[in-house]
Length: 109
Image 1 (tube, rainbow, N blue to C red):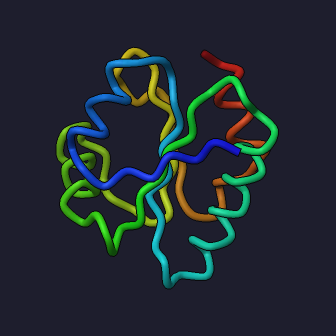
Image 2: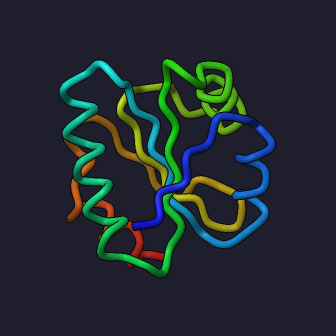
Image 3: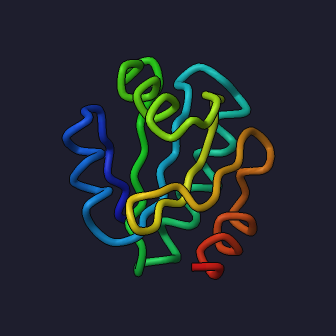
């Protein structure tokens, strides 16, 4: 499993400059967020050809807000994104974050 925890704008910028990647914004205290994180981990375990990054909203609030502002996507938690060529090409929140939805999004790029 290759999960990359990020909490700074520079770490995000480094990811944006590279290949496609997923990013999960999740809450450490929300049961729905925990379920989404478990689905995300399943993908990270099975899909070795794409980077999987995450941030904990409580620990990286400024970065979470920066993402919402930069890409004009309303903040939700949990929230998953697929970035390609430095831009979000897919996002989902709450119960829509499943292994199936993540893999389907990846297959679109």
